[in-house]
Image (cartoon, rainbow, N blue to C red):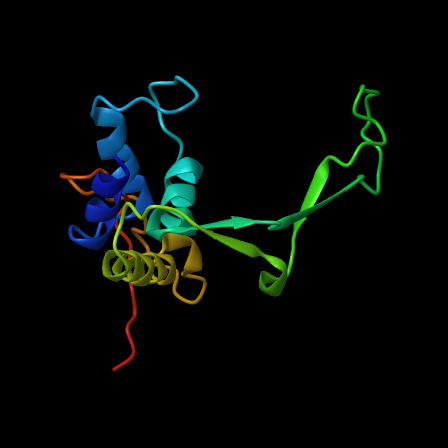
Length: 149
C-alpha cells in the first residue's frame, strides 16, 4: 500500500487528495480500522523518512502546556505537548527500505509543486469562476494560475 501511494504521487503526479480518493476507493483499511483515510495520514506516509530506510528517534521534546486546559483532566501538569527538536539531535536508526531514494525525491518534488500550485496560495489574482467549475474526472475545483514568462 505504501509503494502504491508513492507510485501515485511520483509517477501519476497526483495530489494528496487525489491519492486519498483512490486509497478510499480501494480495499485498504487504515490502521485505526476506519474505512476512510485522512489527508494528514497520507501526507505523513509520503513525508516520513522511515520508508526510505531511516527511522529517527529523539525527534520530539515533550513538555507541560503553558496554559492549563479549560476542563480539569487527569493529564493536568503532565508533559502532553511536543516540540520538534533540531535535526542535529535526532538519532538515525537504519531500517529496511520500502521505497528507493529516487522515488522518494520525485515524490517530494511533486509535493512541493502541488503546494506551490495549491488554490490556497493564490492571493494575488481573484478569478471570477475560481472553484465554481469542477473537473469531470477527479472532481477538484478548477482555478487559474499565473506562471512567470
